[in-house]
Length: 423
Image (cartoon, rainbow, N blue to C red; front, side, top):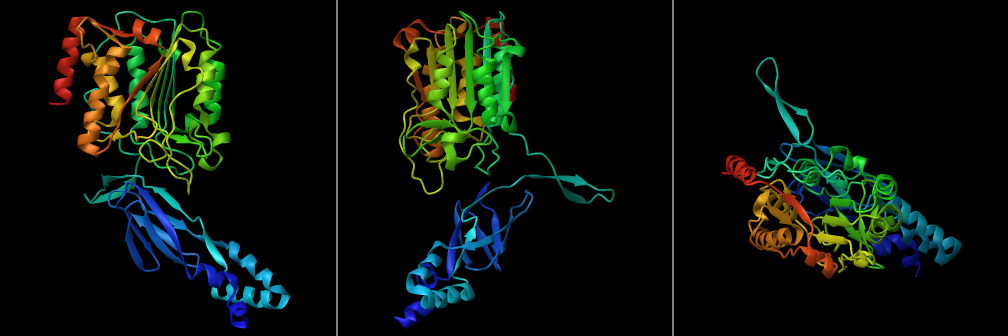
């Protein structure tokens, strides 16, 4: 018993090392700590000796290096020394403090996003690396909205959100910013929305307060009877593991306090249902399983199944197009520089979705075009299942919502641009 007391509770329970998971975006970076080098396989486990405060150096060719300082913090097991009484507890506490076993590390899980560097030339013709903005995604055959709207929709309003980067070091939602910017262009050029009626929110302009401002003030102050509303979101979704509720994650979202910092889908659909609009279209290139891709989940939580439904979707005027089912992952499409579903959504609006060749693209027709395309690419390139969903009242889906009407010469121009951009 004396030997046990002298060893200290933390020394007995925790061991001399603590494992710290490290993930990087992009993966494949080198992490150096305590003279050892590890390659991030997302995650890589770094063994850190308790009581130490090392600095982890992370580097990858073509990216700016990052350093992360670990701080020691008291381990909860130190409190167990109190159970042994004044004398024995003090001995155990002293042993824990001297040996370092009294401490854990903070943070105990690390996520790092590396920024690309640009190469410039100095006066002697020597290339030197200099910090630069992130490299834009590769040009895609859908980035130019070649079909021009034949009519303007003065009574149509849109909120377009693209969240690629997050304040709390969440993983990047690849291409979400580009998704939103191109969607906004399509709305004004191809779908005929007035530019002042399209609110574009990206990254740090898409905080929770921005969500509240635009969904709960901006839209209600503008939308009137028989107007059209279009909502697009590209970024991370997240589930509440306790309730199964689905949330959009704003720029300042905190997964540990999701109820307070996220924007619930039920809240979104409820606010939209209160609008006097005749039709509301919601497109979510996100997922809510917490299993990866365009979904995230708080540390220590397991992925769950959740349905992308809201109690107010049955109001007869709202149609939801979601990138995947509740248990799947929504992917980015590296080859095209967009979210997988968004790429085929844009391609459909360019005329590919006009499957009956009547000169217009209707939402059900568009969905019937993009769904098999998304499923095929997900299986072939990612070895995964991604099945887009179209949810709405039977009457609305039967009657249809016309998205794009174009002339044949615009379609021919679009084909020429497409072939030139993506031979």
